[in-house]
Amino acid sequence: MRRPICEDDLHAWADGRLDAARRAEVEGWLAEDPARAERIAGWRRDSERLHAAFDPILDEPIPARLRAVVERKERPPMLRAAAIVAWVVVGTVVGTGLGYRLGRETSPPADALAVLPRTAAVAHAVYSPEVRHPVEVGADQQQHLVAWLSKRLGAPVHVPDLSADGFALLGGRLLPDTAGPSAQFMYEDDGGRRLTLYVSIRDDGPDTTAFRYAQEGDVGVFYWADGRFAYALSGQFKRETLLPLANAVHHQITP
Amino acid sequence: MIPRDALLAEIPRLRRYARALTADAARADDLVQDTLERALIKGRLWRPGNLRAWLLTMMHNVFVNQYHAGAALDYRAPEDLPEVAVRGRQLDGIEMRDLERALQQLSVEHREVLLLVALEDLSYEETAKVLGAPIGTVMSRLSRARERLRQVLDGQSAPDYLKVVK
Image 1 (cartoon, each protein chain N blue to C red):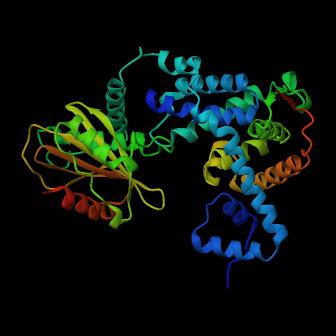
Image 2 (cartoon, each protein chain N blue to C red):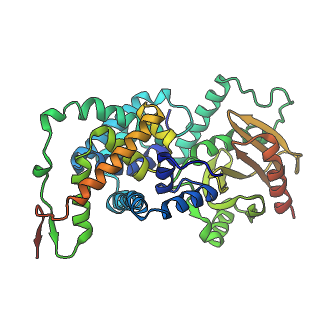
């Protein structure tokens, strides 16, 4: 019935990388022979020992000489905002160079909404691969997160709950945008795939718009404006996967 | 161009990996520094994606080409690794020393694979990419690395190189 267990499965078991079904098969096979179970459990214990031994380094302050390497070259020490703005510009150039012509085929609106998907996609590309610091404030402090971002954006922010769609909130961060502060909320599904919702304040353009879709590299973005807020939902998903998620977000944040 | 913030955020992980790779805090930070310098020079080639894997690839190249090539000159036998003063009952200090010594007894190829998978939590595919090796090679190195580490640690029952100080 079952696929034979091979050495690779044993590593994947020790590294916690099997799905539940396969894990059960491997564990059944290991249980048949205490000696081999002990051997593989030893691998897992060694991984834990490696983490126990070396993880404290993660919490050490960054040595000044290493910080200096990153901060000294080419540009003087800069504000976080300036770095991100520069990065947005780079993203724009790269995106254009690769031939993504956002908004060319649709008639580009003359408001700030036109640049939103690119800004949101770049923010997604920068932060969503982060393992250790994907967010500034974690979902475990959701009240604080909402209060903080509402205060910084100057308007009450609502965080959509996408758990019914399989995405758990990881948390959020504050980001600088050309028009002022913006917020990014990050979600993750069981497969580790991440989705970000970019929320910015806007003072121009029509009050509400329909959904628009943009493809920025391999990041798909649904974006729209609703009153004082503009939203962009970004992820490395197909349009048809992203659309119901965008609908869910829209449904929840529209009063 | 690599965003500086993102680069700064990677330094703690790079330091952890370098430390486990070299078993020497100063040498580890030298390796991180060389990696960062190289990353900044090559930054124009970087495209938004997995910055961590890209940096680890760079560190692998720096380590293999510079540090390991020079290892013949400054290679230190495990017996020569500095003693640590361990206060009574601080077992994590002892265990860390055990592990560092044990890791140094693995070949560089085995050590890198083991650390990328077990410590840095890279997928097997990412590990293969970082090391520029086929995935089959990664898996067989992983097996040998794990078996060797078990052997070495099992044989380290009497840590006579440690001195307990009050």
